[in-house]
Image 1 (cartoon, rainbow, N blue to C red):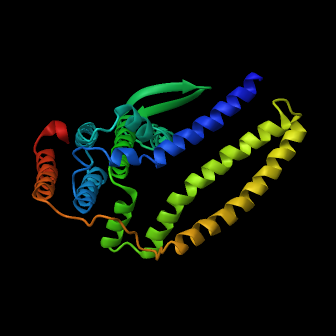
Image 2 (image 1 turned 180 degrees about the vertical axis):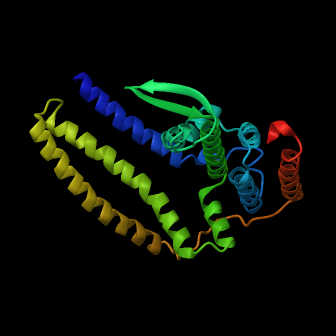
Length: 283
């Protein structure tokens, strides 16, 4: 098989495998760990506190401290660090990096010059204010995404949906998330099978014009199949008694450790913001 086809096949299978592992990592929620032992309601409240603390702080040091806390929680929750870091440093943080790059220069962030770069006769100046703002933005994104991912992989999907309903999130929103969760896996399987069918029917060598027709036809066919598949998924859910409300076998039960966890998280955030205003290097 030609190298370019190998590259295309590896890219498709690798991307699909990555998406499946990212979305359907329920095995971590079933493990014995620190976060898995907590009541999902208390866990959601504390993680919301962490994320709000990241978003409202203007200190890079505080944001880094919160990110380190997130990594420690992941470690004590038996989450594979390689798995966790790959899913928190790809896509959103990398996309945010490209957004933050223009903020480094003086025409977006005027201020004290740090470096001067000459490109094609143009003089680009990186300012202290721009570097600080871009770094703070990236650290905020990485920390908040890490907390959100850690919450999702250490909490069972249905329990998380039920918590959203307990906190009065609209039913249509929760129902849409639940349907998407079931449908995405089926859609990924359809894409994988479609590529395998194309490969088995047209072989490894194909004229580019013929290839364009094959790809265009399969895109339209996939669109039609996905539309009918979504209807079938919803009908199957209704036939099994789904009413729009997530149902789990075990009811939530708050223990003493949950309240202790909530207290320590609240005290930690209060202390770290208290110290931020009194220690110069934390500003």
